[in-house]
Length: 309
Image (cartoon, rainbow, N blue to C red; front, side, top):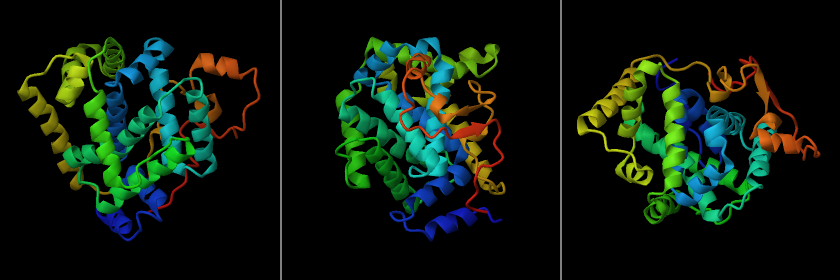
């Protein structure tokens, strides 16, 4: 299969009508690793907003079970991304997200902003570090995909166009990014989670590399020190070099999503209705399941659907 085979297929699809298919192809085949990294940045970015970080700090999950919190969030996103928002798995994942969020009083604009980061951070990441930039069809399809997810989450006033949503994203950050102790606490807990994935001897290097990935607004909002410019250049250059190398490699033949990997928090597999904070799950056990279908993902699933080749 040619390196540009999937891109050629994407360019032949309508980004409005076929946005679920395009998003699947883009995330599963073209930018599998990059999408996971970009969504990590997207969520990290939301912690620069005091109203968001305060709520997250109050739950205590980032301090008590940071890996579990990360894994459950990433798995729910992966289920929607792989199967589509109106599939059995997608509907189950969105119901799960809604049930968890229903415990809290979250402003609609905060929901909107988080949703916007899922659209624009992967696009920006690939423009900087991907083996290619997203094409117009992928950019529009990404917006359409998350717009529809947002509607099913009950988020109001989603901007009607890609450009309008990007303006909202930029304006919201300009208004709301500022330092708060809750930002620092959640930002530090998340950074230390990332650091824990590497050998202990590399911890100082990983910390400064993470800081080098953050822009000035994020560093200020977290109260993190600014890394030297040469380190910023080294980290960015390494990621760009990886992107260039990928252009020379054969394309992925099977779609790959975060949910396909052996999971740190769920090594034996997971059920969508078993994802969420343990305290929430404990309360839920005494109540009806609320319509959850019990979609299950065994360890290293062999039945993951394929829609391209």
